[in-house]
Image (cartoon, rainbow, N blue to C red; front, side, top):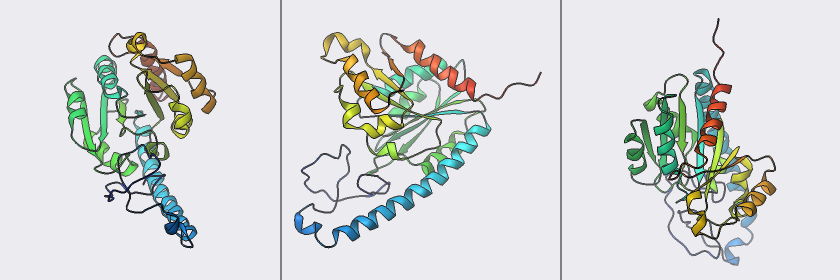
Length: 268
């Protein structure tokens, strides 16, 4: 369920006009005219809050089961979030291609339609399961649990969950991951951390992608870092390029350190 509009995964909303931007692709079957926000507004708002609380509570229970299952097998799960077009899939394909000989890798791909991203991952020789959410704007823990049944990643694996491209709704949904990692590209505005603060507040690492394009775009890296750290002062930030390889060793070192922290020590 979306924390913004209260939609459940797969919900189909009829379109309507908005004066504001939801930054996700589904529509809503209600209007925002003053008449519609009269005496029933408070009751409707209360009902939506109860529904959201109930759905999030159910999701959290599935997330806890996922986390317990992953921890029991020493699997590091990373929930990769971004807006569409951040270069997340390109970087992920290079990452699993580079790391698969060091640790077993598996990928859960989330998208509204098509299995194109999963095909790109499988082309690297790594197993991937695609979850299509239809009108839904995020993955949820229940669907991720079923994907784990299908993938069955081995003990000590790296599990990457590429969430639906959306900087709003995935912030509210725990999938049972160890960390959320937010991707932002230099072809986007450096003010995204201020415009979508919830996502940057819940993420444990920010990866600034497409660094090879910096000479050709007017993106202020220092300003972006400053904005991100206004939201989360201790947020680590990496600048990378899947094309030139810039920053990839730092990205891999972060992954290795997180995996090592979850690997039980071997008995002598």
